[in-house]
Amino acid sequence: MKEIKGIITPIITPMDQEENINETELKNQVKRQLTAGTHGIFSFGTNGEGYILKEEEKEKILSIVVEEVNGKVPVYAGTGCISTKDTIHQSLKAQSIGADILSIITPSFAAASQNELYEHYKSIATAVNLPIVLYNIPARTGNALLPDTVEKLSHIENIVGIKDSSGNFDNILQYIEKTRYRKEFAVLAGSDSLILWTLMAGGKGAVSGCANVYPETIVAVYENYIAGKIEAAKDKQESIREFRNCFKYGNPNTIVKAAVELLGYPVGKCRTPFRLLSEEGMKMLKKVLIENREKGMC
Image 1 (spheres, rainbow, N blue to C red):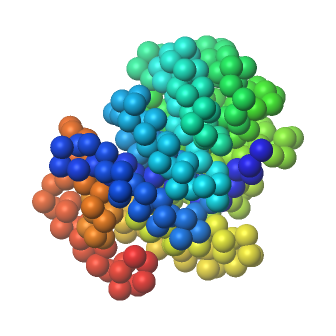
Image 2: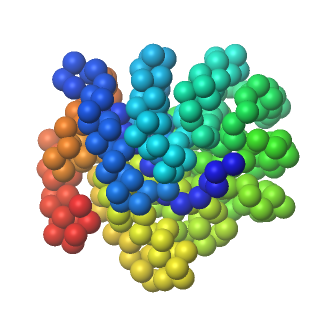
């Protein structure tokens, strides 16, 4: 099994004006991430707009990513659906295309008990032959994976980690504490503001949306930490604060994709209706990008 660690980029899905996938630019974005030293590419995660892509589009995206990565780093595929049956179907498809690791978000909309979540993931793990990283983002799905449930799931051999995007650092700490018995189990930060602090607490890395904008900077947080250069890691961690402050102007996915476009990459906008950014927000985003370019961040 490929080791789960470092900075994993939930790569954006470039689109043209008709909202069709821009295959050429997707390949370019994969190359950009690999050049920056990212440790994994995550296809159709939240930043990749997996929630709004058709099944055939996901197959196309994953095929392109797998081909472009060519074994250099692990390829993750976000295959979580609302139903267990559909999640298994998507997971088996990703497995056949060549994904290395599955990231499976909790079911959404309908409330699920912790026992239902456990049975959901257990059934998926039994049906596939790939490592699974759980994905906790209760603000988006309405269902949270509690630390006790994660501990229980960690005893299933091919459930090997969890990405936490709750924004609650105590939740991350509990995940780490309750799975510490299993050395290879990876707790990953899903909030960019918590990358370094998760590493310092015993986590293995992060799935970083901001890495789409500042890949070298985000990779440097991890690499400096691993090298024992904590102050340098802190400087890199803190350097993205002003960019993250722009998230108050809209959906973070929208901000991230708009930023990459402003950097000169033709990635287009997010698929409607999730694409509007106020005039004030765009003004602030441009200002931050100019300032960060002067600092050598982009």
